[in-house]
Image (cartoon, rainbow, N blue to C red):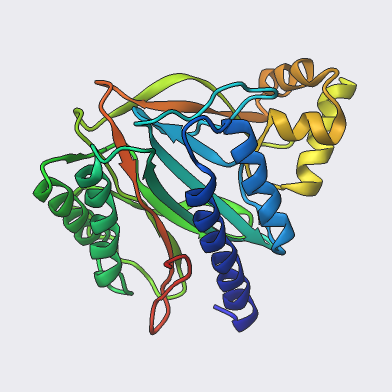
Length: 298
């Protein structure tokens, strides 16, 4: 991994850590999710990075992929368990981190601690030559020791330039794989713990998309979306809120439908724990060098 790439990964990580700290300050009972998301996204830009995806603020049994809609009135409430999944990039080199906050109560401290201890235990052994099943095994063992279960169909992943999910897939259980971590990889280890059955399902379509396969389009609104996304985000996810701000609200839905129809668009469904279990998440980005670097750990 080249030194300038390492420095960009590290800069993205420094910004991501500040965003997590800010999130802890502003996620409160009565705060609007839209205000929080936009403040965090704007702060990323002020600090010299760019959002690698829309701010994920997934509450209670929602595990991932929830971001506020345009003019969303949803508020945080006392007792909510909020997963803040932050993506920051510097020239496409990504820091991916997540932390769980409980608002105003202390009912789920062990659940939150289970995912945090799991990611820390995985970081302790993550280095070139370690198998992904060894990572998954220690994640599962740690979560179960707290009396909870890992979510088996969510996983960590590799990171590359402007790409958020590339091999290897990092399981949250022992999948018996002999695949080894390799020097030069950037990976995100991402344990999810729950008091439910340990499986997520698609709850509904989300506000988050990415361009899957760029294709020529005739419809003007679709072409405007495609041009904007490819220029500003490349293969990274985006949301309706961003489209409304950058290219205007008129025609967005028609354009998205057209891009979906021709197979150019991927929609990220909101992911919900199947049995309505409460979910916690913790995540850090690691550069697998001779001495691994955790870019996002406070």
